[in-house]
Each structure stands twice: as C-alpha cells, then as structure tokens.
Image (tube, rainbow, N blue to C red; front, side, top):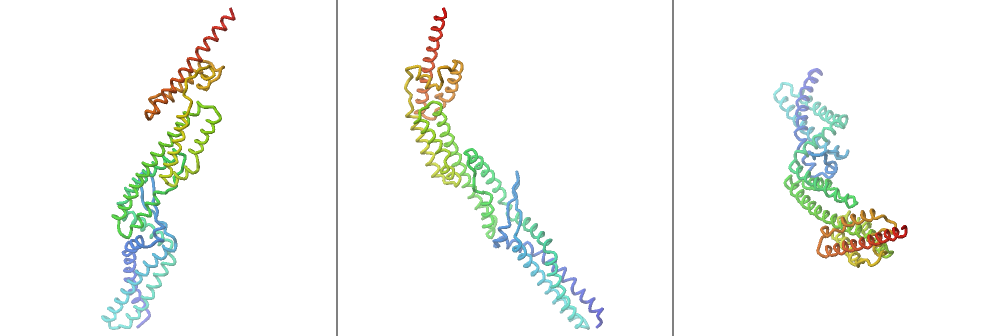
Amino acid sequence: MSAQFLTIATLLSTAIPLIVGTGAFLVTLPWRIDAALQTDPPMHLGQNFIVSKDYVGWTSRSDHNAQRALLLRLVLDATLVALIVTLVQAAAFACASAIPLLWSLSGIFASVIVVFVAFSTLWLGEAHLGALINRAVQRHANGKFAPAIQLVLEIREIAQQISDAYETMGVKATADVLETCRRAVLEHASIGPPSAVVALTAIKSKSEQDLATIQHLTTSLADARTKLEQIRPIHATETTRESIEKIRSSIFSRHLADALQDARWDEAHELLKDIHATVDQLLASRDLSMPRSLEDAYRILNVGEETPLRSIKFVINAYRRVWHPDLAHDEAESRRFKLRMQQIHVAWDIIRKARDQRNDDGNARSK
C-alpha cells in the first residue's frame, strides 16, 4: 500500500462527506433558526422592526455570543453528518475492496480532515458566516411573522395619532408601541403566528381605546384653555389675576403632564375636571351687572378714556367673536354669553354717548 494510493483514497473519502456536510448545514439552518426564534432570549433581543412609510419588516442584529452559539450548533450538526457519511463510506469501501486496510486508514484520515475543515471554517469565516446567519434570520422572521405585519402597520398609524395628540397638549409620549409589538410577537413565537396575531389584535384594541381617551382629554384641555382666555381680557383685579394664574399653573403643571405622559387616564381626567370646575366657578362669579358709569364701561371693555372710538369698535368686534351665544356649549353658558354681550353693548352705548356729549361741548366752547 503506497502513500500515493492512500492519499487518493483519503481525498475520495473526504470529498463526499464535505459536500454532504455542507448540504446538511444549509438544510438544518432554517430549522435551527426557527428553534432559536422560538426559545432563545438572546436571539429575541437581536430582532427589531424596520419601519418606513408603508413597510414594516424585521432586521436581525444578534449579539456575538448568541450568533456564535447558533453557528456552533450548525457546524456540529454538519460535522456529525459528515463523520457518519465518512465512516459508512469507509466501511462500505473496505468491505468491497481487496485492500480493506487502505480504506480503513483513508476513513480515519478523512474523519480528521472533516473535523479540521469544519472548525477551521468556523474560526476563519466566522464573520462571513455570521452575516449569512443574520440575513437568514431576517428572511425567516419576515416569512414566519408575515401575517402580523399588517396589524403592526395599523398599530403604528394609531400610535402616530396618539403622538400627535400628545404634541397638541405639549406632552411627549413615552410608550414605544412598536417595541411592545416586537416583544408580543417574539413572546408568541414558540406558539406560532396565529397566537402573535391575537396578541397584536389586543394591542391594537388597547391603542384605539387609548387614542379615544387621549383625544377626549385633549379636547377637555383645549376647552379649559379657551375658557381661561375668555376670562383674561375682562378682569383686571388683583384677585382675578391670582385666580387666573392659579388655573394656568394647574393646566401647565408637572402633575398633569406626568399623568398624561404615564397614561394615568383616571388621574388626568380628575385633574382636568377640577380645572374646569375652578374655571366655571370663576366664570359664574364674574361681575355681569350692567355698567352704570363711564368708568364701568371703560373697565368692562378693557379700554381707556383716550382710546379712539375706532379702536373701541375693533375691541367690541373681537369680543363678539369670543362671546357670541352660538359658541356656547350648554344652556347655562349660553345665558352667560348673552348677558356678557348685553353688558358689552350697554358699555358701548355709554361710551359713545359720552364721546358725543364731549364733542358737542367742545364745539359749543369753540363758538
């Protein structure tokens, strides 16, 4: 038995196992990835959503240890298959050949070469194999969780509306809805896509409820600010200014902002309810008696003795846009708006008559 024959036999005994081992690596890759996506927490941490205007997909950025563990399992699977093929092949050749020792030795050498090639490839090509694994994981995740993608898109749209409502209130949303979706899908990965769809449906339902609540609170907050602005131009007393400032502080308080930001809806609702009660109380207690003197008229219209009639008319038109009864939300507010408009008109009549009298007196003196 010459060394040349042994070398040729070893190469022949190595070629087929290496081809079969490579095939086993590629065949077991989806199965190993699926198992990792179902049960491996480090693999879960590496999965994230790619989000664009009209697309949601998965991207894989597994940490080094999780990636290396998966690669090692795949290489061990492929190496085991290759060794089995090598041993079976060597045994078959030895039994059928007149020189069984040659094939037995070639089988031993081929087994060593297979193990060496497998782990050398793992060591030298770890970066390239890791990139291959990441791409395969991404494709597999997109295929496995495809039924959930449309739901995620719908949830993202609701989340954007929630964010816009928060921005209207001057508050930044803290909840990451896409992260909640990602975790829900991965938590149900071991059960299957239908279970993930059920979990996402529950998230969508809760998001819709949150959106309705936030929109209601946004309207309530806007109404409180509008009422506050209705009070501001009329009252100039120290007590009223203090009351207005107190209400403003409540509207822009950290307490209310935190309740809205942390989704403590009941608490936010109670705070806004108290703010509205205070504003309504201030509106109700406001002096709506008709002016009896020129000083009363100037005070009610928030103008001065030297203010030109043209400017006073401009102020009255502005008040009409704010206090018109058609803008009232209920019957009590409508009555209050009507009284306010009557007060404004009486004040205007007093000022206009006083100015006419002053002009007549001036003309008489000039004559």
